[in-house]
Image (cartoon, rainbow, N blue to C red; front, top):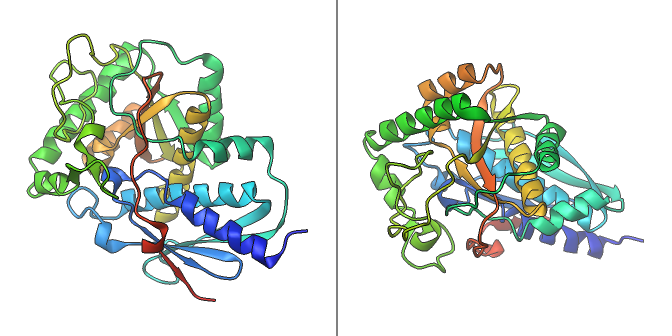
Length: 323
């Protein structure tokens, strides 16, 4: 029999899981308020990227990932949930409320995804030239679909060249945007133990012209000989069926479910947002993929040498209570 003390423990564990969600430049742009049976999720505007994310789209996608982690943690602790997406309708910064509605044993799938939360992190280094099995690809597609999103695999040289070209152009346009380089540099950390931002050692090696997909330069060292990136990387495009703030939150949940599914299957992942951050390129990407819904993130997956997790801010820094 679940008790109020059990629920309190579950809610706190859910916030601890929520902060493990990915965010662009590891900005961690969220805050959480605990009620007696709820977790309210808020945007933290002090962590908005005003140059690359002026509308807060990427911020909301990040917070959507945090919502999915919280849902899975509550399920792991034996609670069913309902989630209300607000996206600032009631309060400007309020994004969602996750409520524990009653005891319910977690499914094996929920337990598997919950176990992957602590293992999932971005791996920006080269992956092995080992194909992702067809059954795993199907699981990634199903994961996006489960959250009301879509996932298109970028297969074949024509599609890969199209997307790689758009990534390259978007990256160059961003680099030419006033303030973008300074914004990126502000989130690069020399100390690997820094609680936010991207440590140089975790940002991957310095980009090189022959790389198929242009990567952000986080100040990493040149990669050693023989450590080239995959010649035909496994890349997928995730999107929502609309382009509203609510769709951003749904996309974040879908993205996180895909990433956790990949982690559970033994895959490493990294994210590419440059073509999504430039509105004109985002539209070209949508048209090129023949999609009505809005693209939200490019992700790369594959097998790789394991790397360590990215640091996070203490839960106490993002949590308040109103009981």
